[in-house]
Length: 72
Image (cartoon, one colour):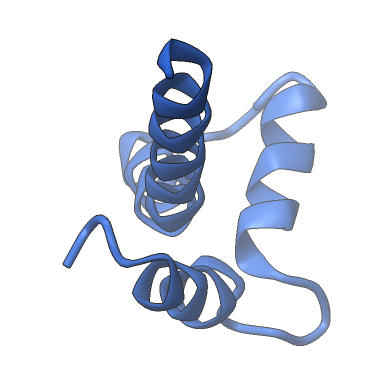
């Protein structure tokens, strides 16, 4: 299931971007982290990991596909 690009894309669009308003949660956490992360707690780091995991899995899948094509 983790090698199914449709499932990974669905995860990115739902868990990865939820909640959608006022901005995607992962985007807000990344801006907070890049802004110095003042006041960021362990729960916020875990939350960032949870929301970015679908994107990391999609990147992993794309990397494996590209590497398999290069080896051929």
